[in-house]
Structure formats: structure tokens, C-alpha cells
Length: 305
Image (cartoon, rainbow, N blue to C red; front, top):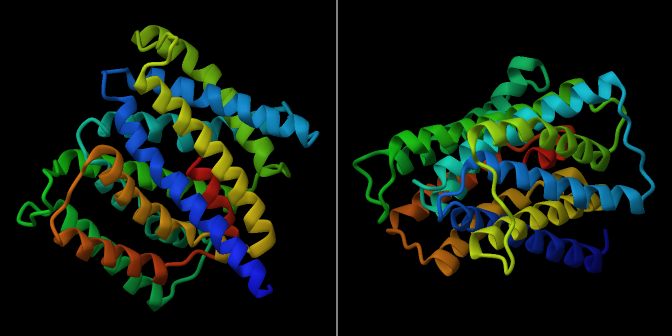
């Protein structure tokens, strides 16, 4: 790459990190009035389906609906959106957005452990050290004796780690079993479509349906903005990975965590004790040492969409 390309790609990386990092404070806003989590997940999937459908139409990408493709869509919808995002919306009412950003940075560490179990990767001492740093960061966050300047309910922090675990498993699932020859935009469209259909009876039975209003109240606007950012940043991720490489592009994880803390302060007014920077440093060292192989790096983008 030329210096100009490196500068441009780095700028794109910063924009992606700023965009993805803003979605957790928006999630906090979306749950602020008591909207049911199933209703929020349904609309997130529906918005993603419409936007991904438009992208696929512009790129003239068909959406296969054979049994193998439908099984893939269902699995990814469940482990990549329905279950983890249902948990996220519940946890968002109890954890600060900045802490949620920090906890999500353990995804590469969980991904490495799962990769070892599935045979997607091989053991390396360097990564074991990275795991130790990453989980040290988690302990700093959840340890009752550590003052972060914000109350951190251990139960909800632990529950949120299940979200990170599911995202990590999704990326390994794709790396291990593939996507039936489909491109990432087709996979995302299919998963969003099937996920939205699955959520229709769930929303009705749970009473979580959210009726759109106009003018949009702030929580609904935050949900729409967050869903749109997810789609457009994901599209940028795929584009950048194809031009700058997966290893370069996956560095967005650092920026998402950092911007998550920044946006939590700017949008929500969250403030933390200086100890938070110790946890952030431990997380960053852990992410650096536990870098995924290129195949896992590309597939990890789907899990955060």
C-alpha cells in the first residue's frame, strides 16, 4: 500500500470505530423508556433487512432460499442477533455504556479459546498471555473492591459476557463451516430476514411490540440510528477487508472500545475513576496479543452486525 492509501484506509478505520462505538450509548437510550427487548430486536432485524436488501439489490446479489441456506440464516440469526442482542438490551438498563464497550473487547479472547476447541487455530503462548491480560481487565471491571466511579452490578456484567461469548462462537462457526458459498451481504440479508420472521410470534406473545410513532421519540430514533450505523459500518468493514486486508481491518476493535468510552461520556455524561484506564490498557494488550487469523478476522465482522 502507498502512504496515501494507508492514510485513507486508516481514516476509514477511525470512522468505523467512531460509528460502531456510538451504538452502545444509543442502545442505552433505546431502552430508557422501558421498551421490551424482543421488540427492539425485531425492529433492529427489520431495519437491517431493509438496508441489506437495498445493498443486495444494488449489487444484484440474489438471496438463495434452499434448505442449507435457510439453516445457515437461522443459526446465525439466533447466535448472532436474537439471543445476544436480547441479552444486550436487558443488560443495557443496568450497566454503563462504557463498561459494556470494555466488556465486548473480550470477544477476540473468547474467539481464540473456541477456535482451539473447534480446531480452527493452534495454541500459541503469546495468545495465552493475551488471554491473561484480557481477563485481568475483566476482573478489574467486576471486582467489588475496585472503584471505577460507576456502580458495576456483577450479575449483569457476567450476563453480558455471554453476549461476547456468542459473538465469538458465531465468528468461529463461520470460519469452521463456512457460509454455503454466499457473500457476507447475502448472509446478513438472509439472517436478518429469517430472524425478523422468527421474532414476529415472539413479539406478539411477549407483548413487546413497539408501534412506530411520528415524530420519532428519542428512543426509537436511537434504535433506528444504531441499526443503520451497524449496517453501513459493516458494509465498510467488508469493503476495507477486501482492500487493506483482514488483519489491518480487525484493528477496528481497539477503536470501537475507545470510542465507546468517549461516546458514553459525551452522549450520556458517564464518568469513571482513573482505574478504568488500567482496565482499558489490559484489554488493549490482550486484544493485541490475541489477534485472529485472517479467516476469523473477516468472519468476526458478521458477529458484531
